[in-house]
Image 1 (tube, rainbow, N blue to C red):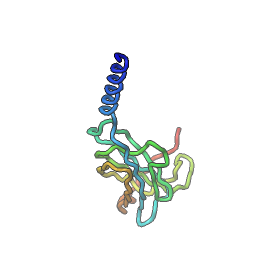
Image 2 (tube, helix red, strand yellow):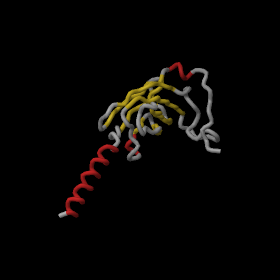
Image 3 (cartoon, rainbow, N blue to C red):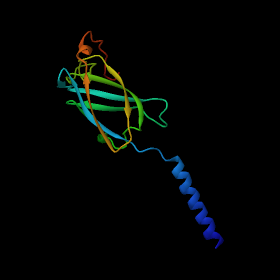
Image 4 (cartoon, rainbow, N blue to C red):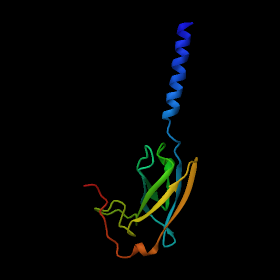
Length: 142
């Protein structure tokens, strides 16, 4: 009887500790990125969490033919909260020092709130003005 009571007590304590340490579910995100009315050929969308998000992690999703989806790599969704978002876009024509091709606009940066839920679709429209006076950045590994 003593062992049974001890075992039940440990099981209840284990569930209580597990419940306290559980993290909020990840929100999967997908969407499109367009520039001048067209899907960008290649690029990336990076979400940097605000410091207020417990255990938030930086996430980068690759864009191909204007589309990105966190489900391409399981477990890479976003925790609910505020994020700084940075979008880079390239022409997709690989050349030396420019793995994804040349930039077609300067990085687009914005703030975004991610809510809790099983999935979120967000379409980004990069302002046309970011295509002027481009400051090229090499993208190849050295």
